[in-house]
Length: 197
Ligand code: MN
Image (spheres, rainbow, N blue to C red):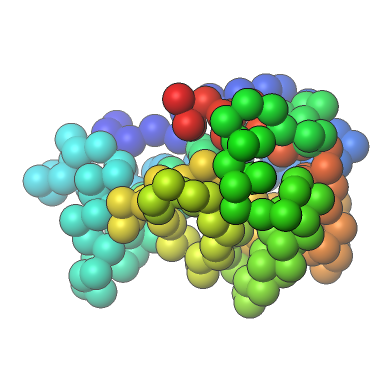
């Protein structure tokens, strides 16, 4: 086993009522597990099998013949990152360095939240919304399908999974409600600050 999805940082039911234990059970226990199993099967016996995930992704991001490997490896990383971006009793106003960076780049935290929501709702089909820091300021961006900023060496601070499997059992097609619930109640701004240390 060369790459690992790691353990969930909390119990499966810990994000309720905003994300159900049933959703986490499927999302972590089936989807995330399958990406990990597929990635390791594809990596087995290749010269990348002992590389860190970031290195693998950066090596193959522009090689269409490696798209299946890229997608599975990226999904292992993206999901582990997503679980860490959430916590029970999260949300609220950030503190520390992240709060300063929000004020540098946006007209206050409420404006930042509104822009994150608007940009995230621009994901067409499956993908992720991100807070990234390509230089000395934070930015909001989106990626499609399994794509991830780390494949191009961009520093990532936060993500929300916007694939239907992340919210359909709890919210059906109401992506905006899921997004708002996560931003207001589960977003782990302490984790974002830890990425800035
Ligand atoms: Mn997902």
